Length: 334
Ligand code: CA
Image (cartoon, rainbow, N blue to C red; front, side):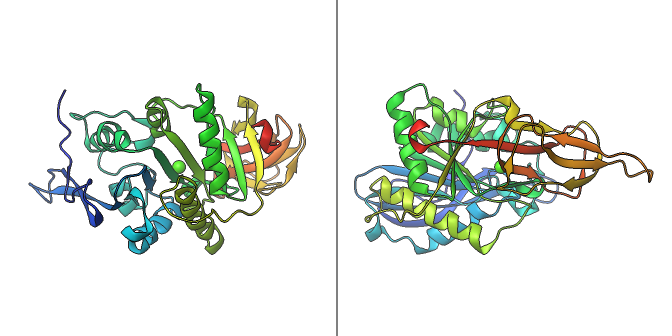
């Protein structure tokens, strides 16, 4: 097995607070012996579970990085029993460039897991998480938002797990995160996702979608910050009770929950996030922009539910995701 070339500049096992980098050799035109330096913080105090917290797996999603740079600055060892590993911008090159995928090799970090130690820069990052960081963790929280092209109701999400006890523990963590919405999510395509690798290793894994559009709001950041602290409290790493308010439970149990564009043009939303949707309702209209007088293509809902996600930019292209409809469920039935 080839060793991963990433070197942490801090001791991941030391008590106290460490602020450092995951240093990855990255030889290139403007820096022959250069490195990609991904910030990492570890806050550790004695024995206890390890939480691995990540943001900017996609580089244009901001609630996670804001919450985690804040947490890394504020969390003290005395507040912790166990260990918190914080990587606020997991795909740091993409984060710096404000892009979803890495400008280094064009790869989407969340589609190339488990990665390769002898691959390109992004594949090496994935491999380091797969073989070094994930095995240290008991609970894994990966904070996503919609990025520049999607917008979501703020939710924390779990996937169905083959192990019932693990699914219950995961749902407990999602419930503790306590975003305004909690979703049992069936992915469009789970192959190559960080989620899948973490779950294959038997970890409690929680992800989120906390907004989108390539920015953040005061409200979405507050949800992220509270959620992260709540999960740390629920797992016993940080003392105190999670702060719990109302959360509406949803699920996306079938491919009908997702709708994709079959025309391109000007995007007119007909419903907003959080609106009730009936089967056959018009979600959006797409106008051909090259002519006036043309009839727009109507995007209709394939199922009933709540509009939980939607296309964000003003123009839409062939194959873009138009909408995610989620079905309200009782928490107990998840
Ligand atoms: Ca994302």
